[in-house]
Image (spheres, helix red, strand yellow):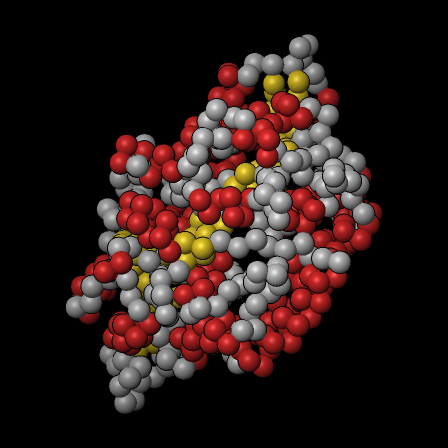
Length: 464
């Protein structure tokens, strides 16, 4: 049965938390810009909406030039908004106003909501019948897990993969006599090894470690690690590695399980109990980013997204020799993989042309441009072959061991999640405030069970 493409007022309000009229009054653009009114004879114009800073903007524009060479009868207009949150609010406004673009970036947490709401075109048959994309093994196997709905239907194609990793100052590790973590199984750190090494890598102004008598946690000269909870992509791997899950098999938030709460508590303990990680306020007081702190030796290692390699790499970290490795694990190695989707909007008047553009975004030309600068990881199996690696691994950007990340570690230990309909509202109202309370020092068990209960009430109401 074909889903209705009508976007209900309830769906709009539950995702955005504001009315379409209010957003229109805010001055955000609604739909196609004036340039789209210009039409060349015999050329179909389609609009592509999304977000991104300079690298993403330049990458999309370069892709448009190449695409229009291959398809001279199609012109693509790129509408770029710097922030994903701003763009998604704008897109919701466009849905309500009937002025949505033809194709679009879709955040991973809104993908299922929009697909089930009928806003995203079903492209399953087009993919299956495509000579390139339809090949068995073209995408990483995890791609089907998150792209397909309960009936195996695709309403978008994942743009790439990103995952958490460590970035470390190799000189600090050499000084401490500690071998940093890598990506191979025999190079990974279990939790006990991580805590032991983190203690030795952390020193106060008097040269004492947290385990030493007289250690001064208010005057730390160098912390071992920054593992922020605020960007939830980064701690999810620890939850899975402890036997927990973010979203369970019923599509409900499972952050109140003993395994999930234990993992979150262990991450909080790095700051408030073990004193090997800085508080967010401490970093703000220093006025430095994690990149700057790794570079100048105030931080031995930072756990950040793989996308951060585009600015935290050997060519930009000027004082330190930079290394990379996998995140520590609790019970078994796990890392959470995700990224935004590219979708055809169901209301497009040009479904065939819109599909050609979304298809192009899943071909090597587009993905390689972002992989070469360290922003993206490969999501196509051909890109992790020996020949494929040579096409994107870039000296000065990717450390020497980076191939291990995508050929050994993520294929074996990467996990994905389908984020259910209603999650945006549930997260905004309950999960994010609970995480912020944990960041500020509130014990996990005091906030997470009630936050999950309330979040799942919202999600359950969308499933019936």
